[in-house]
Image 1 (spheres, rainbow, N blue to C red):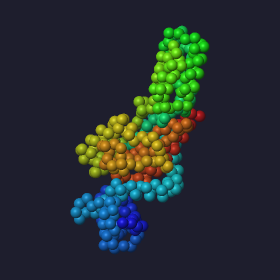
Image 2: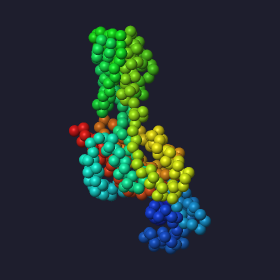
Image 3: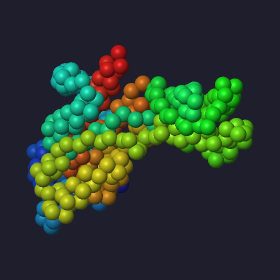
Image 4: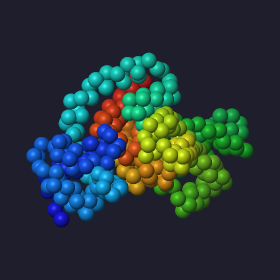
Length: 347
């Protein structure tokens, strides 16, 4: 069955009305809500077709209809393609307010916590903001130098010019051996990601290092510490209790499951995308959500990116009937402002 323009308009009217009221929508309401000038009987027929196609459902006999995940998905996809230009026009006021927020803080931790609170307050949903981290960071350079008679300093420089230092205990190594070790390490590791350093490569380097083979393992450990991502990930959250404002999420079982997932860093880490969409915004609706205890919710995330591929995630979690337009608009502004603020701190 073809999804005609008329059906699309009726579906959009059902969704918009349900987003506002949270109540099933009937044909009489739609007849007043659209500019189609159709009778209630005609709208009922179209709504019946939309139900058969899986875009809306009738939760109770003789009740109106509510959108399904499939219906929300069509609505969101259309909105994302049609509304971007309009969002660009309206983001100036939001941007000015976020600029004021950013100017008032010096510490990154405080900035991110404030952003999470602001998102929760502005949207009336739950919000999360992660610290910026490298995704698949490459090694740029490794420098091993003598620190003392029995100590070496291993300096690892990774993408984004992030620097990590580690002290390595040794029994003794002369300058010529140290020079050869530096050449061996950089020749084999520079330009690689952590995932590209395999056992065969490590064994090859250890063999070439000869008596200094144990130092290769120490350097690999230093590299791992320098560019690891998940262990140090910080996620700041706010607005968890906002879910109690929405009846469909506020019953004891759903609320308990949501709060449990929202408080677990490992759970929220599932919302952090390695790959970004064309718009920089990812929308999960209902069962699309990668967290089991959030299957009754919708989640909208955005990736903010700094120089050299350093990325962080901001997200908003709410009911399926969230105000997607407002959330997308807000996240687009916040991701831009976060990126700008970090660059200002580097200047």
